Amino acid sequence: MIRNNLRAKDHLYWIAGILFTALIACFGFLLAWIPGLAIIGPLATAIILAVIYRQLFGYPEKLRSGVQYSAKNLLRLAIILFGLKLNMNVIFQDGLPLLLRDVAVIIFAIGVTLLFAKLFRADYSLSLLLGVGTGVCGASAIAAVSPILKAKAEDTAISAGIISLIGTVFAIAYTLIRPILPIDAATYGSWAGISLHEVAHVALAAAPAGEDGLAMALVGKLGRVLLLVPLSFLFIYIMRKKGTPETNEKVAFPWFLLGFIATSLLGSYVLGTYIPLNEDLVSFISTATTFILTMAMVGLGLNVSLASLRSKALKPMLAMTITSLLLSGITLLLI
Image (tube, rainbow, N blue to C red; front, side):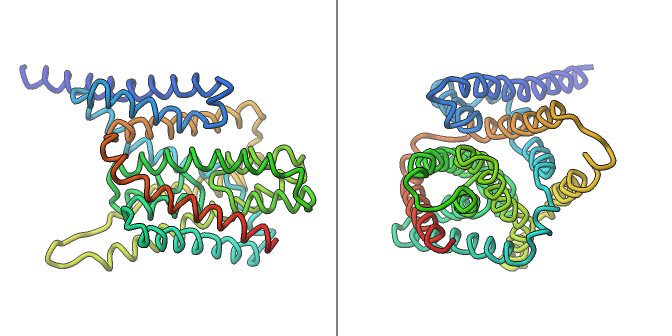
């Protein structure tokens, strides 16, 4: 009887922990409507709220099981749902040149970030996550590769917050300099899609260029999103090679990546073609995906210690910022 009561109590704490992350995520969404915070977005806003809560009130130990469930399981669910945003038809139509260009961008972003991280003696784990986020698709890419790289929850949350903030700054800067650039709307869109961090940043920067600019921007970005899958499998191979028989270290297969591929195929070839979807439903799915990812980031953000942030995040952020500036400048010259 006592054991059953304890199990029921644990179950209630688990549910309460999930609801707690949902509550902070809701506040993040509400605050993101404020003009000054709208440019940052709900993801970064919710992470900031979670970090502030941790510093003021400490980690909610009783709710740990539910908070960790959001940070791990809901994170994987969000990545799977994120696949619905990837239109593989666009990728296949543009073919090999598009993918080769995107491969070069990802290699450049990760390689140069790690190079500057080494020069600055910055934290390697944070720098690698920021390099992946810069090269592929921001916080979503960081969330996807973190379990493979066995990154700490704190590092994942810090890097996701940094990439969201810096990416937003870059997106706004793009919109400010667009009128003075000697390029047309389509070329500007391609540049934004090649060089900016997250899909939301690309959309923010390219929208003022009109439909042609936005379309070219999304084409450029989607190729990098697709490459998240082979990049993840490459990391799996590297991590398994690093494992030693003495430690019996193994890298669990990220089954959620198969879900990501499945939803990408579903969204590209089934939904809208054989199963009609109205715009309201599509918008709801997109918002729900963002909300679930925000809940996961809240769970991760509660693990962040500001003392650690000050001591280990500044140098990786500097390395990532310099890399982003170089990526923007070089791609602008080459398009």
